[in-house]
Length: 84
Image (tube, rainbow, N blue to C red; front, top):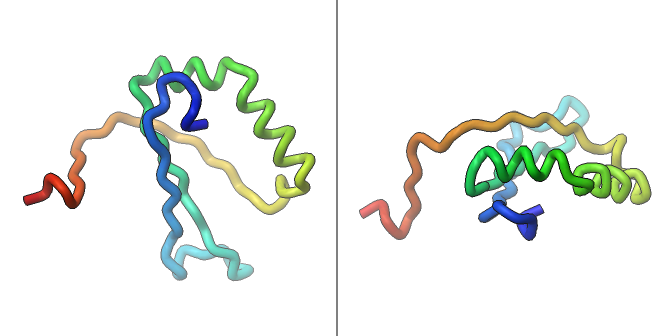
């Protein structure tokens, strides 16, 4: 997805153990940076979401994942290089 037009970066965050599922499976959050909301809407209108769904189905992992989507606007950002 990061290669898609308008997407800038992606981060995978492993959730703390206390946030693991009841069966002990770890949780992850994927966070994507996009140029703007229109880039996100363009992605969802494209064939890419269906292609990724097909790939998950072919690999038999659909029953192993839970997908929730939400979006918003960055109000503050800091990184270790500029947080002096």
